[in-house]
Length: 168
Image (cartoon, rainbow, N blue to C red; front, side, top):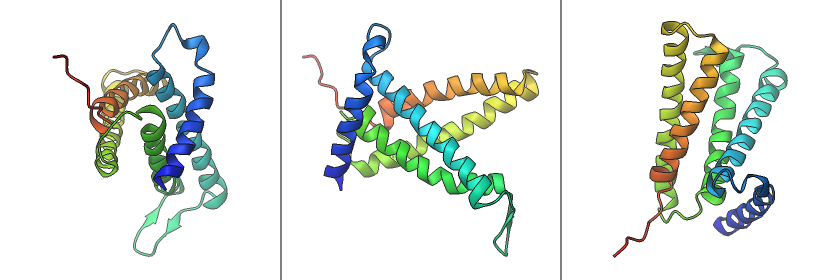
């Protein structure tokens, strides 16, 4: 399975890198790959959310017998594990391929950073909208910038940490 994922990752790298040339002078390749795969995963997330919310759940409350879940939250709960996995696989096999950490450790650390990102989204949206009085859309934009930077740094230096040779 790992071999198959590596082959798919290499094909995705070739496709992403083909579009890199115009950005060569502005951003490093790893950041370009992160932005491209993260953007693609975000589009997948939005598309799946729309399909599940609108067509699968038919915008109806999901009654599990012991709890009723609103359709927008139910769609999130269904889609989140899918895009969590695709995000992890893209990070592991496309963006941060130099990491020598075991996959289980990477997955656990990736999960920790995602939980942190969810927490930061909540905190910054509350802060910007309710305390700073900014418009919700502007607040979401600022929050997204902060969370993307946080996610990149933690994924690069924590989740998919590479063993750097020391000068000596």
